[in-house]
Length: 167
Length: 451
Image (cartoon, one colour):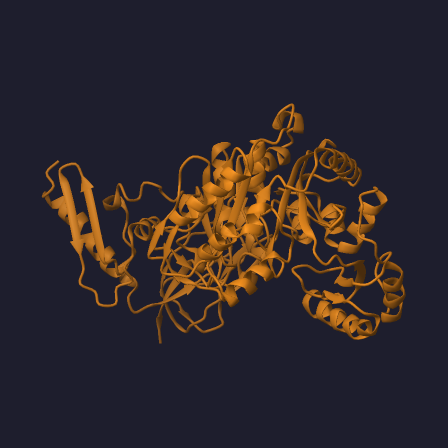
């Protein structure tokens, strides 16, 4: 494997963006012919150590039902970095643990779609927990930009559901 | 055996349960609050689900969140650890209703043992010795006075719904009783929603001795000997050991048999600990039962060779005790445990923050159960236990030598810990001679303050 071919450089760029975004102070990778050491000059760095980094990388996978890879430190380049396009958008997060449903009942149309305007307090989805359907309200007014989850997906507390462009 | 188990706890016990599950080939699901995102048990679990913000009530004690997580992860069973929801009969009932196996006794038994006065009566009926005292809950201060006179001062008033030292008052003279009765009752009503009190003879210098029990779901009960937990400060244990220097083989056997009979009668299942006070005449008196695995279970594991958490999982999966325990249970050697807390060693104020250096001692007969690691953060929201240091030796002298050596090599920087206080306990001549009771810490701290 040529460590300097374009594919790897792109992966490396994504990795660097990911590390910067999560305010990692130092990173070292050793993979056969490829050895990378990055040190960021950050005055208020949270100084994430390797164990915290490993869990940050594992946490970059969105669905909680997928296994958190124990070998995250072995293959960081294969991980998808957290999406940057959310910059400037408000994220509506789940206040409870459960199963996400985008519409009030199977077959019915979705509460909201990308591009719709929502008001604060408007019901935008349902999270089912212990056989109860909990209506989740938007905590902001604006335009729905993206939905991060799909119908029937298990979600955890604090999981991003929608991004909203405020206004 | 279960396919998947959810661990409804955090910190060192969550990791302990996770380890037992892994070794039995069970998939593990961790639930965590936002403050525990970088915890070891979250890191090592097969699946992890965030269930709430840092506050206990909104996360680890939030029954709907825990059950919802169990449902979306499709688990077979929940292990509640110790503290938190482990003795919550309502939680056990919700598990049952949701078709999830609760790893512990049936809710009815938990409820019975949870009401201290009812538990006392159940033990009394089974001829387990209990402290002389009131026959059930006492209605008025006047009744309390009559009972106290019959029992003889000093007496202690205790909340039937209580624990952890709240709703308790020691009464040394008759004229103090009415005021203390009302104080205890209000405190209990505020803390537990139930102001009912019962009364017991108060032993001035007791030793705290507890018995480990295991019961399968087929009516079989066994005891795994005792632990001595007299080294306490404000009802919080600091050092525990097994076996107790005060027990004799005969006493152990007799009490063991009585306990097994009693617990079989009430339909006990899974792990539990029966707590006793021992007076100056070596008489044992039942005080309460904890219907869960305890913090100090490792000292029993060390002297018996039985993995108690695996036993819990196997019992809950339907296995019989004779398949889990050796044919003949024996005490081998001596074990001591120190509860290392994140707190100032003499002021006992909690010390949260980031651990900057962490060296865990090892070696022959040294075990450390901890969820901390270098660069980990001890959050301010939970209890201060950060590690359990357990040593095992052929006898008590060797165990003490190992504990002193291990404590001296346990390096924790960035936060305060109780390590130096534990070293003072181990160095104390009274401790070394085995000459102590539950007032030991008061005396030691007074000595340290003077010296």
